[in-house]
Length: 207
Image (tube, rainbow, N blue to C red; front, side, top):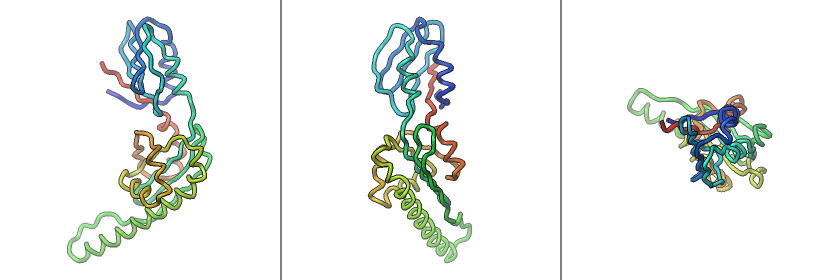
């Protein structure tokens, strides 16, 4: 079973284990920690782990060093109804812009009324994607050289359509972290809270 844990809590849990008897293997972007008198853990930092080695004791220092490292991350969150673009330098939001555009929900009737609704829905969705793409380009392009990584979230299909709407947004997909952030609504308050999830560490307890 794996779960995402805030990096401060991971540090509190792992720091006391440094140097105790056991075994530690760093490989494939993760650290497998096997205390001699405790349960094994597999820990994956959110932005990868380049260190590779095996130790005949518990060594968590390289892992904690990676977890503590801050990054410049471009963020794009889009769902039908709203969008948010921003850049985090570490956990600090240095620039952002959010917006919304009404997109009709489901239509329960059939016939010509349903066809009109579908066309209107598609028009509204296209308009939102265009707005989101223009906003993303305006907010994120100035940070293209500095942004090491990108975090994408909201609705996966709508995010993909937004990136595809402008050729100058392709770099976001290229630098995207593996985790997709399925936030319920792309609002400023949601964006401001994202660092906790952005830097959360995947902890697996194989059992």
